[in-house]
Image 1 (cartoon, one colour):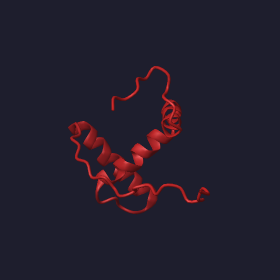
Image 2 (cartoon, helix red, strand yellow):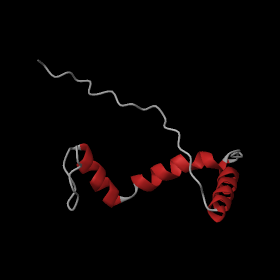
Image 3 (cartoon, one colour):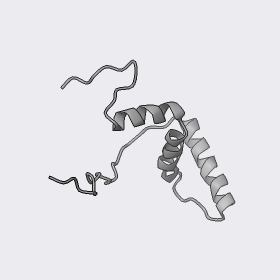
Image 4 (cartoon, helix red, strand yellow):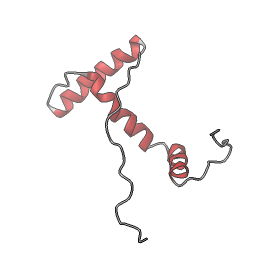
Length: 86
């Protein structure tokens, strides 16, 4: 059977999670949102909306994580990891 050009459809439905932040981290997140709002010229009403983009940026710039993610996507286990029990 010929292989189709379209690969598997990724489930991109957002996943809702709940986290608890230390008070000082929440204060810093609020300060960051205020600074970003001033820089962009529009107020950020909900500082928690910054969490997902911050996590994305953090993981996108972590070189070691990029290696692990690439290995994980290609089905190769990163060195020093165990196979998962099935």
